[in-house]
Amino acid sequence: MELIEGHRPVTPADGIPVLDVDPYDPAVLAAPHDYYSKLRQAGEVVFIPRYSVLAVGRFATTHKVFSDHENFVSSRGVGLNDFALEPPWRPPSIILETDPPEHTRARRVMARAMSPKSARDLGEMFRDVADRIVDRIVAAGVIDGVADLAEPYPTQVFPKAVGMKDTNARYLVDYGAMVFNAIGPDNELRRTAMARAGEIVPWITGACTRERLTGDGLGAMIYADADRGEITHDEAGMLVRSFLSAGVDTTVTGIGNALWCLSQNPGEWDKLKADLSLARPAFEEVLRYTSPVHTFGRTAGRATQIAGFPVDEGTKVLCVLGAANMDPDKWGDPEVFRIDRRPSGHIAFGAGIHGCVGQNLARAELEALLQAMVARIGRIEPAGQAIWRPNNAIRALDRLPLRLIPRAR
Ligand code: OVM
Image 1 (cartoon, rainbow, N blue to C red):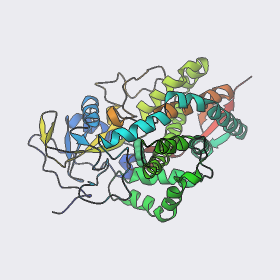
Image 2: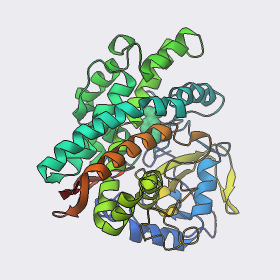
Image 3: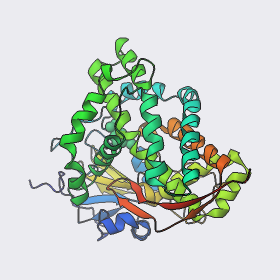
């Protein structure tokens, strides 16, 4: 049978509305909100002929499908390619692209490495690096929020946290872009990202080995679990690869998006300055409002249903997290950015057994950064046009010109 984007074509059940859009058109990726609302309005689940997939974008249904690991599996890939039918571009992640029981062991090891205690222990290092970088950008005055803050901060703190002896900020960011573009179709974005694979992948693979890691980082914790026999040493290397896949580009994006939100909403920045305890809730609202990971897929592992419609085994379902986090049936005034909204239950980190295992670290990184910013910055003003960097799975900025006005002390 002829495959479409590496999966079996879907015959949608009677009554499932057809949505004639290309969610991976760079123009849609750069300005997705019209697509999000069309997707939600069309129905509980829609059929997208362009890629022969189903898609969900209403909050309740997206949450349900995304967390239903028994019917909607991850082991066949969370992108358009069905790993049961076509070999994936890299050996599958043993945490992202697996189901229980295999998933459970890997998850336990990763959850321990990135526990709340780990995040607390890393706080001081996060604050030190954040203070240093924010000092520098405030002195500069006019900056690019992406190149001067969103990229440098995670690419400095994350390798330190993992315990990488040597690092390469460009490779880390670009590897993330590859991994996330690979979630989407075989389009220009994915091909352009993949063109760098020959250079980047060997470096990443090497960076996951034990001899390239210090004895006191998160990487060492994973290898120590291998020494204890919880996982194999090969699996430890694979889990370090998961750190490098999911830990950098995501936080770079979260920070860029936070700067964008705060620069566009000066009243919200003032609220944060007046009450630093809003740092964490502010980040949650950034996540809800911008959904750094905008779309992840699942595959029906057996014949099942969505909202009462039959769904065939092998059907790929796009779970449009960005649409769900903007669903007016779930959120009041979803298009208003309010740092004290406390949007508990947003699904920017996913939901269920695959929910982001690094979220404690991400929150600690952002808290340290927002604290450093509040201590030093009076106002954050746009200094030019924000430009998005389209990616098949991530909603990230490419450029964010900002003017930083120092805080009067
Ligand atoms: C992994 C992985 C890769 C991309 C994303 C992700 C958001 C995990 O390699 O395990 O989670």
